[in-house]
Image 1 (cartoon, helix red, strand yellow):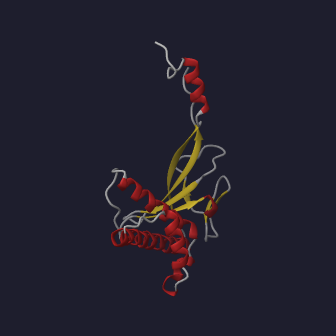
Image 2 (cartoon, helix red, strand yellow):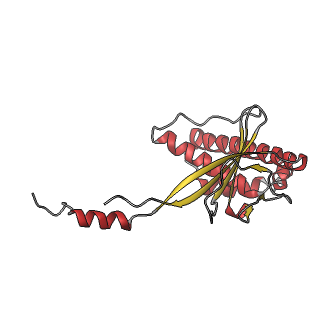
Image 3 (cartoon, helix red, strand yellow):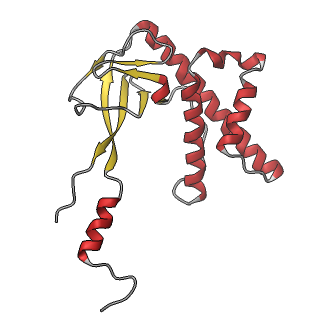
Length: 197
């Protein structure tokens, strides 16, 4: 059987090799913040929660009242304006990166809803699990110590297993569960094992 859409074994193998050879993998560890770090994390969690709920309300109202679908870019611009309002200036006390990442998470939540993969996004509550995501511009990693934006000391991480040698984290997600335990999830891009021939 022949045809323009039929691939030989060698052609198929070559195309596989031309595809991305990296994959994303997260490494999760428990850490123990200092009192000062705990205060900053509490502020960051609170600001992320407020921004998420604000963005949810903005998008819901825009659609129900005007039939308008707001994008991540729309909310990002509005957030800049919001932070200048006297009632919300406290949002500037934390790194702006987790707040922008929060809007990206909200955008993904709406995309999943519209594509039928999830229910309509709901408000985040103060007493539930808390999370904040830091892109590479908002943390420092020197190969052994991780320091978040707005902090002077690295996190006291319990390294239950080592990161791969030469690891370069792309994003960091810090969480606190209902039992008041803190965790950090370190996302890496790793080389994929070659396909067997």
